[in-house]
Amino acid sequence: MEKWLPNISWSEVWTATQETLIMTVISIVFVFILGLLLALLLFLTRDQSNIFIKLINWVSVAFVNIFRSIPFIILIVLLMPFTKTIMGTVIGTAGAFPALIISAAPFYARLVEIAFVEIDKGVIEASRAMGASQWTIIRKVLLPEAMPAIISGLTVTTISLIGYTAMAGVIGAGGLGNMAYFTGFQRSQNDVTFVTTVIILILVFIIQFIGDKITTKLDKR
Image (tube, rainbow, N blue to C red; front, side, top):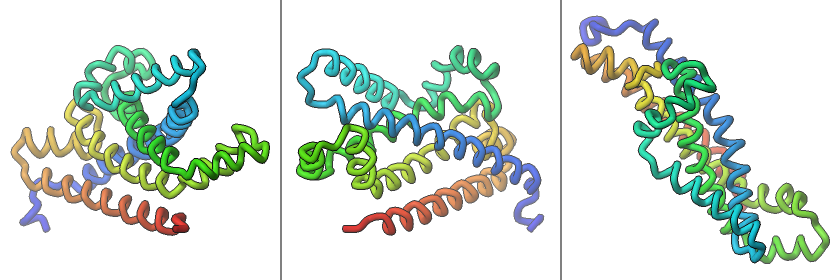
């Protein structure tokens, strides 16, 4: 092994992998909550006649479209003053969280909103006709009906987040991306770049496998 991978320090690889997992797991929890709330806001305020509700929808749509369109590496730089204010640092895993969450939450919200839109409107109207409140419709109609798509979207978003953590590593956020760039690329240690890339691919395959299994189990069609 040492002959083929002479520059590999497995303890450093393990530390970098842990940092990537920490950034991904913590970020996806916030992305799931914020994205779901934002998706509900987008869905419930669409096609409304009330001017105030229309304004809320317009602001929500603008927020989603703007932040999911900005390239992640640029967003990190734009958010540095904000990140410094709330996190106290712009480097390390802590410095990566604001950009990771703000970039991924609008993307996930749009996926979930599409899932809500695809629900049979007859089911929603029938619930309203039976006197169901908005909260009851959300809890017993929207979320259960859209759950396979919600999990599928979460899987796609989690995989995207792993890619974002790799990009964040270029500016010192830690993790496998940091190791691949600073140790592998800048020092011309190709074996380090290779190993970190393989580990990222393995993480992606595992997440995709788990997500597909859960989605298949929830999908009653």
